[in-house]
Length: 362
Image (cartoon, rainbow, N blue to C red):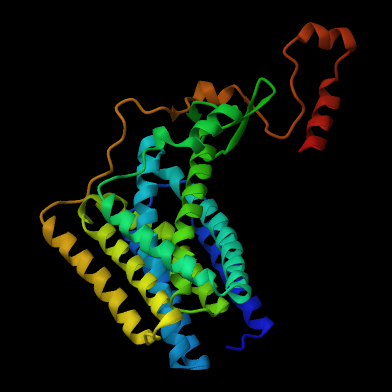
């Protein structure tokens, strides 16, 4: 598959433009409803499918099918990300109006990390073909582990990442709007929103360890691996707001995702040592597993409506009051002295000089 540099540049430029449009559309903190989330989900899926059709038209049916197989695998595995995000947001009692900003930054980080993982994976496969056996074994083990632990969920309270963050990073116990950092009494502090962002980034790295080998099982074209990942990830924010209140209904989805990992692990092993399974068959198997698991889940939970994931009885953080916000200082600025008598002893700026000084700092 011959992909010229300008094509890479065009795809990356399109991603940047769409991220900018998304950020502009959500520049003000507000609660994203189901209708808005459904509209944005439709937009991102339409872009993903349209790009696949473009690949099919330019490079042929085989590469088009490989893209769609990879896109479907990544999109399906991303649903597990959504459920973990819902648990994290519920535990931290993050106001819904602030969640989009965290997810936007999380997606930016995910694109960077996955790009690094894809480049590293392609380099390993190119220089050490035996690594495919490792990838296949890892996918089989991960799939089996997911089946055995299908009833278990992330517990943020016991997260080593959260404990380390709290230990090493000074942090407030209140949300100050969508700010990640605040300054109080001259001290720079992280808000709980930054802790949430760090935890989301770490969980995405963990998920990438599963999903990147999985997509390499259906295509070894780096361009297809990256674009399938990118278009699947770009729609994650909208997917979260669409599905977060329905996670209790997808009771069999984790089992379906585990079977997908096991299938692609088997496909990779067969490709290495026995026979190549055509891409249309792989695509059909993945689509069937996901469709059956979703339909079976919805059937088993029919009659249940949407409901917000449960939060702890005593959330560890709260939204700052006006009085608490009033104590904040500019994050970028001169540290205010807590000892006014020392300021007077050493001389102080006049009001005009102070205004010019503050203007310079800004």
